Length: 143
Image (cartoon, rainbow, N blue to C red; front, side):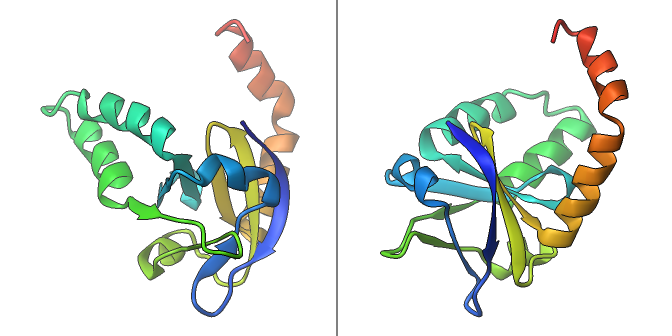
């Protein structure tokens, strides 16, 4: 499982170091794709396959389903860790997430999210300020 929050820089070639405690889970390959809220998602190959099967089962006739499938699948790319534990983030994905140099790598159990440092700060502050309201809404789901 992926948990925790880490600050990392993206180098001039577009590579970012994956936190050491996450690396062993990505040795068999990983997928990077456009995430929600203008971040990137990294999935293990196994978790990606589970998600992809759910995505392709969505109703083709519904515009929102098609749009979400396109966002997640067309934007995806296979990645491998290099010898220093870095992954290369293609330019189109860095542009999508506004990633330039300073970034945050966040573990969210079955995925990793990569955020622009300032975007993460703003998102986190907004979410923390609304935590009571969010918790109340989630209680209706049994959480």
